[in-house]
Length: 158
Image 1 (cartoon, helix red, strand yellow):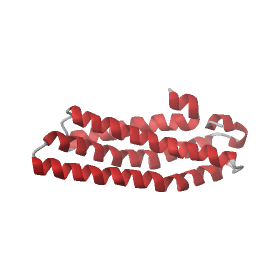
Image 2 (image 1 turned 180 degrees about the vertical axis):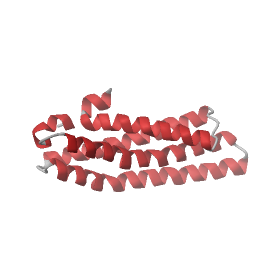
Image 3 (image 1 turned 90 degrees about the horizontal axis):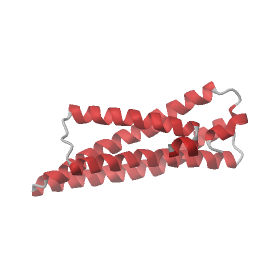
Image 4 (image 1 turned 135 degrees about the horizontal axis):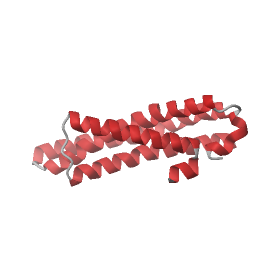
C-alpha cells in the first residue's frame, strides 16, 4: 500500500514487478530445489527488500529529475541510468557475500548457512532483473498509455 500511495503509477509498476519477482523466485526454488528453512526464508525476505530498495532508488531519482525541470521522458531515462551504478554495486556485493557464505557453509558443515546464501543470491539476482527489466517495461507501457504525461505529474508521485 505504501508504494501505491507514495509513488502512484511507479508504485503500481513496482507492486506488479514484486509479484513477478516472487513468482520467478519460487519457480527457481522449485526447479533447483530449495528447502525453505528459517534461514532460507530470511534470505528470501532480505532479497525482497533488495528488490523494493532498487525500485525506490529509481523512483526517487525520477522525482529528483522531474524537480530539476526535465521532461518525463528525459527523467525516465536519466533515473534508470543514474540509479543503475548504485543498484548494480549493492547487488553484486550481496551476491559475492552470498557466495562466501555458501562456501563457508559447505566447508564447515553449516547447511543452514548454505540455505540462507542460496535463497539470498537467487533472490537478489531475480530482484535485479525485476527492478531493471520488469519495472522499467511496466513504466514504459504506462508512459505510452498516458496522453500528455507532463500534465499528470501527480500520477508519478510529484
